[in-house]
Image (cartoon, rainbow, N blue to C red; front, side):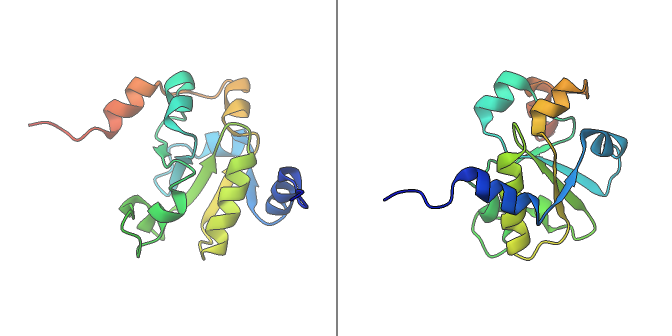
Length: 142
């Protein structure tokens, strides 16, 4: 069966319906406690390239399940209505589609970063290593 709507059309439709921030806009708010940056890339990408400091990793394949409180996979990090969740991927395509999906689920407090992690790195924005990301997320021992 031939593809009748390609990925580019899907991404363009999503981009027309979601809030998109530039790297500079997100950098200006990186320390805002009302902002939760969400890295939807898979673990291999994080290991290879690092991530945005303070980002929560929610792989694209699990995102809808982690966001929905009725899901057995729900993650409480997504339950704070006072936060804005800003998603990113490698180039901004997956995050545009993911942001649209979360909007379709009823989330109004969601956006994504234009150009994704590639644009983040290209513009010299800070990067957290994979090791530092893992250490930050590890439970305290003691």
